[in-house]
Amino acid sequence: MRYIALVFVFATTSISAGAAFADDKLKGTFAVAGITNCLVAPSGFANDIKGNPTIASGNDSFVLVQNFQARLNFNGDGTGTASGTWMSMLSAPPAKAAGSAGTFSYSFTHTPVTNNSFVTLPTPGTNKGGVDYGPSAGLQFAVEDTFHRVFQLSNDQKSGTVATSKPEIERLTYTQDSKTITISRICFVAGSLARLD
Image 1 (cartoon, one colour):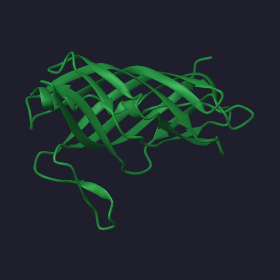
Image 2 (cartoon, helix red, strand yellow):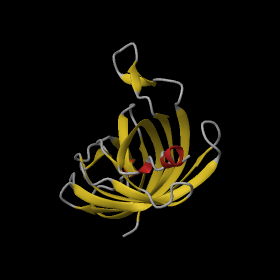
Image 3 (tube, rainbow, N blue to C red):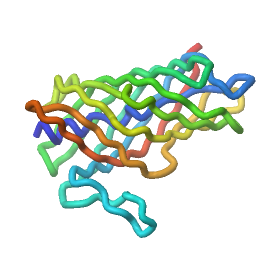
Image 4 (tube, rainbow, N blue to C red):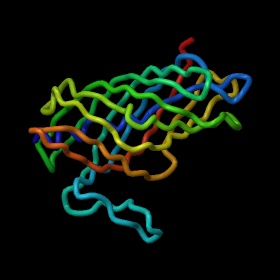
């Protein structure tokens, strides 16, 4: 039960957002919120007909639904930080239905803003969080892989959207009973952002 509950943990560690100024760098504080769905595959993923690992292996996969909200700080030099909260629900099977919630934080880099669009990537080793509520309360986790999120900005650069453009495997790790456990998942994100300052 604790193993299954932790996978609610969070697809939203993959979120960051921003708005452009006169050049291609972002600076300021922004809010982002939305929904994340993940295909969780404890047995890993098999390749599709084009050789991409997108098909859940085994009979233990399931879909996780979460919401997220975060505060994002862009430094003006292509880097930034994010921190926020998430909540998720998993309905049976494979485990008893339960809710979970927690926090996350990470650093990120972003591509130059071109045609009101840019891509963010979490900085390796910084994407971490914890579970505050639910069957896995108290556990700490990390998301090991760097994944891409695509942002589109409004013309006035005060609002925008975020979405996932292709399937990418993310590995979530945590320690339980002195053993490191890794869970593979593919997540999609859909959300909106607004400038705060």
